[in-house]
Image (tube, rainbow, N blue to C red; front, side):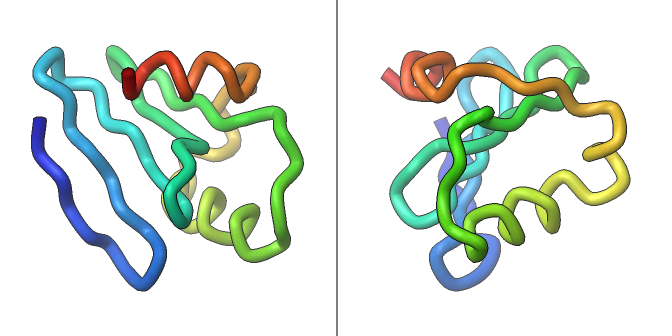
Amino acid sequence: MKLQSIAANQNQVTLNNGSVVFFSYQTPVAACVKGQYYYTEQKWSKTTARHINEWLGSNRFLAKTKPQAWFDALTK
C-alpha cells in the first residue's frame, strides 16, 4: 500500500492489487479499479465534491457511482 498526498486534505492510496482510492479529508470518496473510475453517491460538502471532480478530471464523464459502503470496504 502506498500513500500519496495530492494537496491539502486530499490523498490517494495505491493498494497492493493496483487499485487507487482517493480520499477527501479522511473519507474514501472515489477510486480507480481495473481502469474503471468510481465515485461515491453519498452527498458530502461542496469542497469534497470539488475534490472528487478535480481528481477524476476528464474521467468524471465515464465514472460510475457506488454506495459509500463500497469505498469504505475497499480500504479495510
